[in-house]
View 1 (cartoon, rainbow, N blue to C red):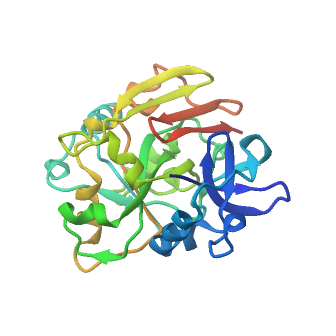
View 2: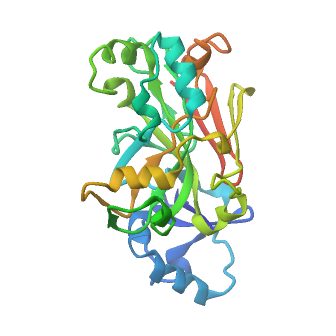
Length: 301
């Protein structure tokens, strides 16, 4: 199931699912279902039973009649990892750094701004004075079940679904800030775009490979020109390993928490030191696409 948050023809924010070229408003389908995604995730097992009992439901709107919003506009927290070795190698080279051995010993993450959430076709404002605005092509997983000290082999039980994630990055700001060994600051604070939908975990099982990694094509385009063509199966750390790391030491993972995979190799412009494409400027349109999920499109202003 592809779940969405959308603005209906009355300008109201609602929750539903995609059905062909249409959108089902779940609360119109049944008053037992909520109008917001976080409530749905909190009680999704109960709500999925309600949906199953409805049988076939006709869409209430055509996609062209509504505006898709960030599918989860209010996550409870947002961790972003560096899960792909190729991105780590490329970006480190561009920054003049080397990879510490510790990266190979544990999944590394930082907390990003869970209030700075943008959705499909939202405009992204370039930070004032920024000269090297960049994108990062990632997949994100949404937690659906509360837990702590979760083992990697049990982590699938705690995943609700997946979405496309663009970790917008102000590289010029980031370069100065990272001279202080504290982690990302304002260079990562201004925009996190997700969408266009959340694909439930069961629907993604068809892409799972024998190595426990999704075989998912991940591509990026800027102004219609393809920049990156990668695959999630090149990831070094799986979401299971990431969830284990996040929840260790008695830390509670909550429904509605989001974890970013990190950038697929060549999924950001810094990896080529902006030689494949100049830094982003107002007017540029970025499209990130992940097989099985869809296209996340944003315009820089």
